[in-house]
Amino acid sequence: MGNNLTLEDLNEAAKIGGPATLTQRTELQPASGPDGVVAPAKYTDRSGNGTYVVEDCFIDNEPQKTVLLDSRTSSSNRLEDFITKAIKDERGILGKMPHIKVTYKDGERERVFFDTQLPHRAFDGHIRIGSTASGLVSADETYISARNSDADNMMPLFLLSPDTIALGAWDSTRNKNQLRIASSFNGEVFGVLANQNDDPKTTFIHRAGARVDPVEASIKFTGNDVKSIADIVSGDISDNLKQSFVKGGKKGAGSKLGLGAIPPSVANDTLDGVAVRSIVRTQVISFATLRALRFGLAPEGDAAIRTLLFATLIDAMVGSNRDGANLRANCLLTETSEPQTLIDRRYGKFDELDRITLDAADELLEQAYKQAHDLAGIDWSGQTFEVIGNPIVIASGTADDDSSDD
Image 1 (cartoon, one colour):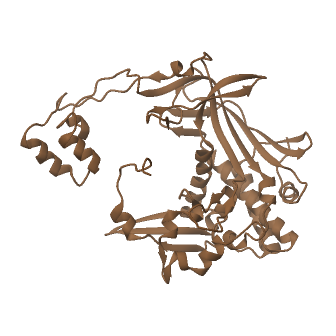
Image 2: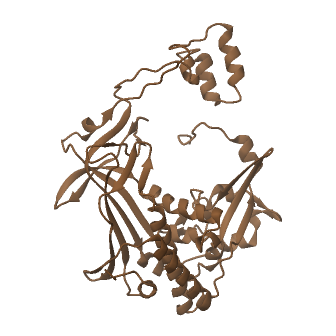
Image 3: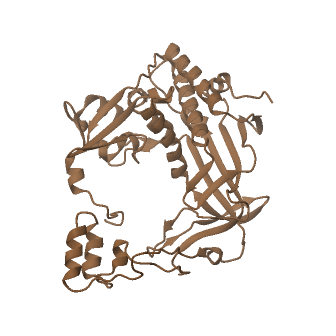
């Protein structure tokens, strides 16, 4: 014991030639026990069907078939979820971090989103087509300066959205000066399949749960009743569902509206989970990625900002792990041992660190912030770039997925 991560470690990592990464590896298992079934992340194959991602990984000196339980993107989002909650609760240093806030007003309803929630962070479409109190966001000098940031001076973007620099983004819709920032965090959760046969798809569990309707087991509307019911629910369901109910192959089926019973099934197109022999969560913070960025200050000031970003990522990582690894419904996991945390000292040398507690991570972030305040003049006091969401977005919105549109 006693090998704790310190501010000096992060300061060393902020300078060229310092440590390359901080890696945390955690062994997990289903919360119900090692014989439990877990539900991996679902993806869509080329035929439009749901499937799991099965890959070969090099484990225990041999290739083994694994299934992806949590992707890199999702792992990053979990860090941002912790940051978002800290901002909402005004908790600690993270709660004071500058951020972008988009507010949509739909009648009396108000919906608020932060850059830490939007998929493209500071460059997200909801921000770009919005407006400020003085005009369009796309014409705002502060926002334009942030978009014009580059590797030699990231300060304008850092002042607006530190999260975008820490976790990466691509200003992909811009016709020129498209800023790309690699994420300094990489994480995923995978399970080693219990069945290592040649066709891992045969190991997928296919079953669907039942639904009991205490009123009637089967409900089917006919004649004028179909239109009558459709008119009642028309403001509550999507246009696609309404058309399916009124004109679909099972016209008038109450099951489309959540009425009637559904018997349990073992249909081949219904995925319910897999059995795994082991589960691993890996989380990596790349010091080297952030070392490539400058902030328009002297070397000492630039290094202090990098250290602050390192500490921000560590605090968010530790915070996102505080309640275990409950990834989704039917994928509730628990640790089987303490995580192994390593700092890469370069050239094959690694230091194993004690487990980083949330209190320790909070303290480290406070130290890094004070240093950045003293050496680089950084002031985090909850600065918010307020964006008024474009009302056309709300008027044009639908619950139907348009991800397949060209």
